[in-house]
Amino acid sequence: MLCLSTRGKSPAIPLHQAIIDGIAPDGGLYLPERIPHIDLTAMLASESYQTAALHIMSPFFSGDVLHEKLPDMIDAAFDFPVPLKPLNAKHDFLLELFHGPTSAFKDVGARFLAQCFAEAPSQSRVRTILVATSGDTGGAVAAAFHRQDNVRVIVLFPDGRVSARQAHQLSCFGDNIHSYRVQGSFDDCQRLVKSAFADNDLSEEHRLTSANSINLGRLLPQMSYYAWAAVQYAKQTDNAGKLNFIIPSGNLGNAFAAVLARAAGAPMGDIVLATNANHVLSDFFDSGDYTPRDSLSTLANAMDVGAPSNLERLRHLYPGENIHQAISRVESVSDTEIRAAIPATLKKYGEVVCPHTACGMVALQRLRDAGDTRDWCVVATAHPAKFETVVEPLVGRQIEVPEPLQKLLDRPTFAELLMPDLDALRSVLQNTAG
Image (cartoon, rainbow, N blue to C red):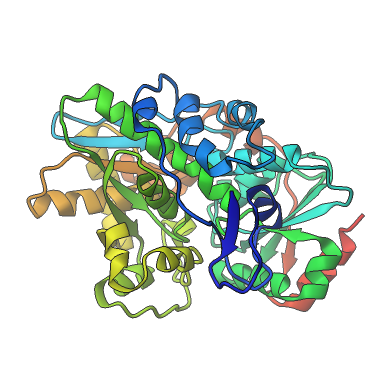
């Protein structure tokens, strides 16, 4: 399948090339030229997460050089569970996406993206992956690409605005992974990345590409767990309806993957987004007026985004008022509500959740309070142990650290300070080349 830029000023290219390049030459984001329809009967018959992933992803890779390798790529990338957990008898579910090596949902996309780079036609020169992270993306990308041949990773994260354990994950790899604490916000990190891509000479010299959710290779694999959850729901319940999803959202990549999965035919119901106090998205969906602004620092730091990149994709596919066909509503959640939701979730369901998942739980309660009795699934995006300084005082006990996360926390770390300007980044790229 060919891919096109959202801005329409770049030529169509094969899917694997869109994944390797990351961003289009005109600055737009790549999208498949069309959204294929899956074989729903085969999807519903899937007996494993990997099989469901193959059914929903295969049509997108049809005709691409990676298509024959797709089953092996999926098996290699998706080697951890993504369980759909019923919370009670009142139609509430949790989709746990934190069982990968860095205890966050970003592992799904990052590990598959690394497979794409490994299996794509040979690259004779080193590619530089430039990744801005608000907390979890950088760690997942670093883990996925650590020591991979012909790939150098530059991780930019906002100094002091990620949790201590997130910062440790972002800085504990070394080798081909280079980590930088940017003096600013995630938006500053993201601006640096976009400025570097916009500099044609710099981009060409260092063969820049992205592993953020602006890369289509991150989004396509994320469709898989929505398809799998929908299949599991159909098998676990006698309800003839479809499972609806509440997705904690910052840069909109995870949410856009859900929209794509449903558009391709996954049997999903409504999609609601839960943001933190950065309410750019909720304002836009309420008024139609999109006004990017500086991000606020919140307890749900991985969602501290004031200019969500994937809104460009969403508006391209669903222009104007049609956007409400993609996303039903957006709920903005304050830090005060997050603090209340974490112990309330433990009391009601016996589950300890991270601050981001807590935003989803607040959105769920608002729906219930408004009289919505449908079946809803909150997407659990990260393990609460990554945010122990927030969660543990609220639940009154220590949170057990998953073994993969503990292995990373046992490693030494190093991250240099970086000013948020392009000249400083240019110097970093030059000094780490080789």
